[in-house]
Image (tube, rainbow, N blue to C red; front, side, top):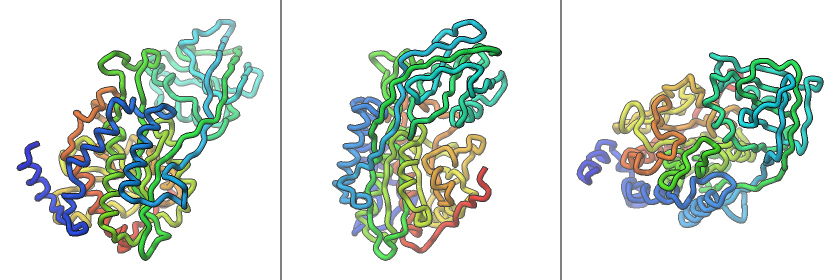
Length: 436
C-alpha cells in the first residue's frame, strides 16, 4: 500500500496518542511490525513445531525482544523462559483384532500413556461409535479428553479425517491411565483385543513471559498473550505436503501475528511508562497440541488478581467486516468489549461480538483456563472461521497477510486497553455459574 494511503488510514483512525513525546504511529508502525512478523514466520523457523529446533529458535528471538524492550522476568525468574514438562508417548507397536480379524494399522489411531497395554472386551473398556452424520469433532473431543478407556468405531464416511487425527501429538500434562483407540471403517465389535507398546518420556518446553510492573496497583494484572508454536514441516504420512517448494507450515497468521502483537504492545507500554496496573506479556507454547502452555501459565496466576486478559489470535487478515475491525470472543459474557469500544470513540475502528458462536471459540482458545475461573479473558481475532483459505496450510505465509491492517489492529488494542491498564476501568467478571 502506498505511503499516502497509509497516512490516510492513520488519520482516519485518529491514532495520535503521545508516547514519550512521540505519537503511537511512530512506536507501533508498519516497518517494525513487518520485521518481527518476518522473523517469526520465516522458513528457518521450520514451522515452529513444539519440541523442534524451530520452536527453540522462536523462543530465543522472543526472549531477545523482551530483553531489548527492558521487561522484567516473571516472579523473579532468572530469564524469560517459563519452563514446564509434559509426558510424551511414542508408539513402538500396535495390534488390534476385532471379531477374529486383525485391523490394518493404517486404520488405527491409539492414544495411550502406558508402556504396555493389553485390553479385551473382558477388561474395563467400552465400545462406542461415531456414526455417519454425527458431530465428529464433538464426539472425538468427548472420547479423547475423557477419563475412561474406549474403543471408538468410526464410520468410514470420516476416513478423510484419519490423517489429521494421526497427526495429533501424543502429549499430556501428566501420564493418563486410560487408553483411547479409534478404528476407522468397522461398525461392530463383539470380541476384540488391543495390544500396544509405547515409549514414555518427560520433555521440557517453555512459554516466554515478560513483566512491566504497575506503579500504583502492582498486584493487579493485565495480560497480553499469543501462542508462538505452529505445525512444523509437513510429511506425506501425516497427509501434509512434503516437497521442495512448500512443505513448511510457516504459521504467519496462526499465530506469528498474535506473537508479533504481544511484542509490539510490550514495546509500546514500556515507552509509555505510565501503567498503574502490572502488565504481563506472554507467548504460549504447545497451543496446537491442546493449549498446554496457556494452561500451565494460568495455573501460576491467582485469578482474583487478573483484571483482564487480551489473547491475540490470528489478526493478520481482514475480518468479515473488512479493514479496521476485529471481533472479541465471549463479548456478551463481560463488559470488557464495551470498555474497549468506548476508548476508541472518534476512530474508525470497531470491535464486534464473535460472529462464529457455533465454534465456541471463547472456551477453545488460550484464554479459556482463566475465563472458566471468572477472569474477563477474551480472544481478539480477525480470522474468518468459515472461509480462512490458508488456515493450517503451508500457504499461511506473510505474503497472505494485510500488514497495514494488522498494524492498525495492534494500535486499536493498545488504545482500547488504556483505561484498564490505567486502573480507571475494571471489566466485569465472567459468571462461572453459567459455564457449560
